[in-house]
Image (tube, rainbow, N blue to C red; front, side, top):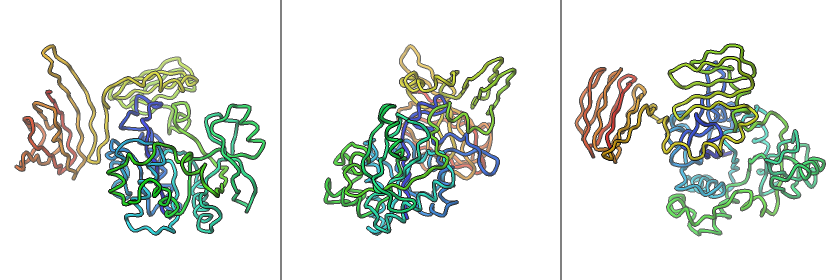
Length: 428
């Protein structure tokens, strides 16, 4: 059984902590078993492995998320990067081509799921059941159906035709995001929410890919990614499948895509440097080094990060994405596999040149490449730690207090012997 996790999105609904690079699945805000915190993607991978089905995980994502994935999950997962965003069918097709080119059998069961679902252990037992139904040839495509708790207009619905076992139904039809009246009627027909989880044999999906390219080699498809239609997996595969089954799941299942939803899962009402007095039903998350103080407030979400500050009534969190859609032209905080950086200053001058100041942390034993183009010069001051700087192939030791002066187009790497904290000033 192979698992494909879909990791995409810009996460603007959880601004200012999320951005185009640091999507919601990478925010380390959920309580972890070791009494620390973990992100949504770390939680899902941990649950897969705890269930015994996480030995082969492939993550489908965009190039901007690679560093966050490697930082949080290490090298223990495969990562397939899409050259551009073209919806879920191309992403899944490319990931399956990766498995095919790696020698995975056409008969192997593949399960595709989102990486940011908040759910319980029963969800992962249901994934195993779905793979078993594929192996038993119950249908060429097997879906997960979430038992509805209210007539939602945000989800698609899967309408069952007949029951073929205690935990599996043949699917009659799909309905995409109905109005509330239609949703109530669908629930009366025992319809399920479409959980966005699919199981099939690898060969089944590769035969669909062959409609668009006779060459289904991974590198070929990635180089000519535009040949695949920009369409969702539901429309391209699920609604065209000759036989579809659904396995129901009725446990905990939440979309933590808004601050209101996420606030109920935080380990504490306050995270970070926060002081409160006489507040109720209010959660405060602060990633800044300065304090956030709240007095006499009710029913609020307060979030402070490098990209901005949010103060919102919980009932208005749904409108956040539209409000901040065009705020900020670059991420102010980004995780890398070697550590992280935070922008602490940007200035434009009358003569047309710009400056950028960043605080940089390089984890112990890691190497960071700073050979970025577009800057006239860089000055880096070592604040703490020890390591080596490699400039145009020449290596020298650096420690706290040392200054590195970089000129344009020089190749520049830093290798840490212990954790390094740096201040970088770039002129452009």
